Length: 118
Image 1 (tube, rainbow, N blue to C red):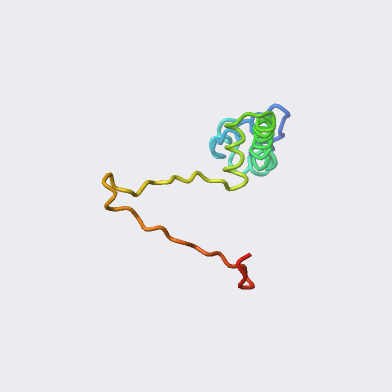
Image 2 (tube, rainbow, N blue to C red):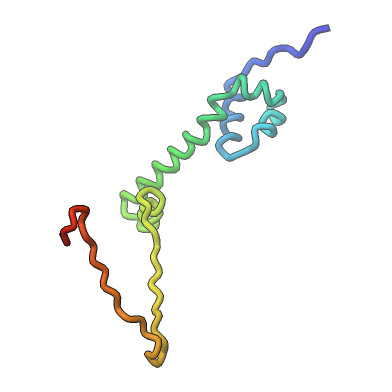
């Protein structure tokens, strides 16, 4: 009595695993789709599972970067918010209609580490 024959990955199988990894299919489900155990999937398709999404992110990131470089304002804003930590700041007007609850101005002096005002 012998066990299952050893799995030999094909080019098509590797592409299918990578495609599923890119779109976020769970590893257990990828194993079922290609007809292997989870352990066999990990053993034979480690690179496709680990690098597939990174490669896709690189392609999409490159396309977004090119759109931003070519003047797409939405792409530029998205890039700056996600890569340069820009954020949207809302300025709320805290003055009541009759002016009775107007906040007093506050002066903030920023000092350099050496104590100077520069």
